[in-house]
Amino acid sequence: MTFARSLGFAALAGAGVPLFVGGLGPLLGHAFALELYIVSAGAGYLAVMAGNPRRAVVAAACAGAIGMLLLLLPLRLPALVAGTALMIAVGRSTFLHRSGSLRAVTLELLLQGGGLLLARYLAGSDAISLALATWGYFLVQSLYFLVGGIALRRPAPVGDPFDQARTRLLALLE
Image 1 (cartoon, rainbow, N blue to C red):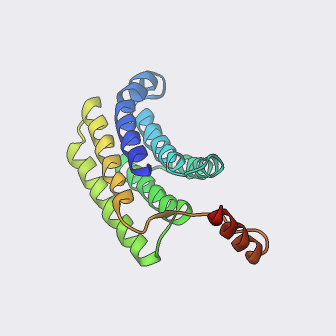
Image 2 (cartoon, rainbow, N blue to C red; image 1 turned 90 degrees about the vertical axis):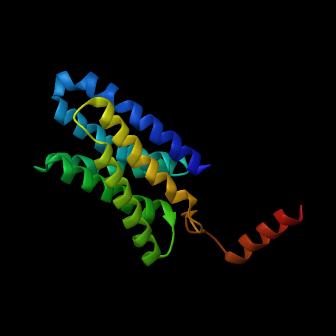
């Protein structure tokens, strides 16, 4: 289900570029509207991939704060995009999903690098090519969920482990 959500998000994120930049560009400036969209799409991606509403709010709030910091720094567009990709990689593999540390770093390096390379290849100066670049980046990120061993991070159990095991056993027997 997360793979399908990721594909859907890729399509919506790509389609949103011309709408967002075209709508807010005259008010904020086209360059800043694009930067704001990139950061917002990264935060939105983490929220959509979070798995439950509480975790989605926390992921979006943390990513939004990091994104605002990125926007406040005097970064050019390539550095902002790289910072947002780093935000997505750390948020996804550290806070949202469980996986081994070396494996997670390798997977994130491959996916972020591949996504950024595809986005760079598809990017141009018009809104349609920027939409394709955004779609391509998030399309590559969807491959994360096709790799085996990816599981949502669960909160630590509260209470007696014996009682929890007993409850799970009774649920299996029923």
